[in-house]
Amino acid sequence: MSIIRPFDPTDILKFNNVNSDAWTATYHNGYYASYTAQWPDFCLTIEGSFDKTIKAYMIAKHEPPSPDPQHHGHLTALSISPEFRSLHLAKTLMNLLEILSGSNPRLKQNDHNHDHSNCNGHHDHNHDHMKNEIEINNNNKEKEEEEEEEEEEERSKGNIDGVNAWFVDLFVRCNNTRAIEMYEKMGYSVYRRVVDYYHGMEGIGSTRDELDGYDMRKSMPKDTTKRYVRSNGKDILVSPDQVWA
Image 1 (cartoon, rainbow, N blue to C red):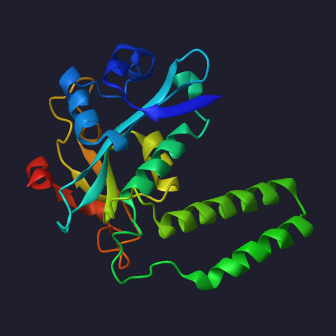
Image 2: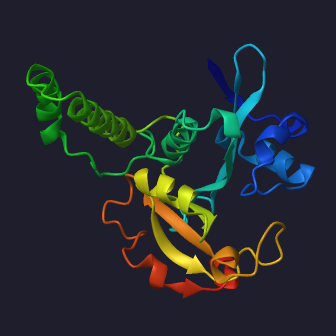
């Protein structure tokens, strides 16, 4: 069993088992402290229920302040200890980030992004699948799809802690295929390729895919026209200066 709790600055003294991963960047102590001070709700730790071993953590934020048209949730770091992978911990943390970045009933403008016409059909079909099950594998797949639909439906309803951002984004090395595939399954897509994004950072190689980073994004319910995502993002090359401009 696991417990999800706020990330504490003292966690940096206990997360070596997580940060030993070659893909994980380790920052200076003040960096983590600044996140917990400014965006405490966006920084989370998953630990064991009994031994208090840190299994995973996430530090994230939202910026620039609303109503800036680029207001978005940003994943700065997410890492899972090797022995606790394949337990959907990453998906759990990303779901929480999207809920916090998503719509807020108190902040919603005059838009209704969720199509309620499909709700009844979804719930009715759930029973049909159970009655007409043919193969266990097919049923498992259908169940996963239904759970994903329910998660999206819940996100569309909003959360009183949501900041009503336009999108969530993250950066990942272009050669980190496992992470890229994981985020794609969660609905993220490449918005642009940032040349030399990881230049000067520890643990990098010299190939282009090791130095460059993908800016991956997922629209939140507020972005009804999908203006903050694109289909040809891998072909769009930008410099780090353009990202932070």
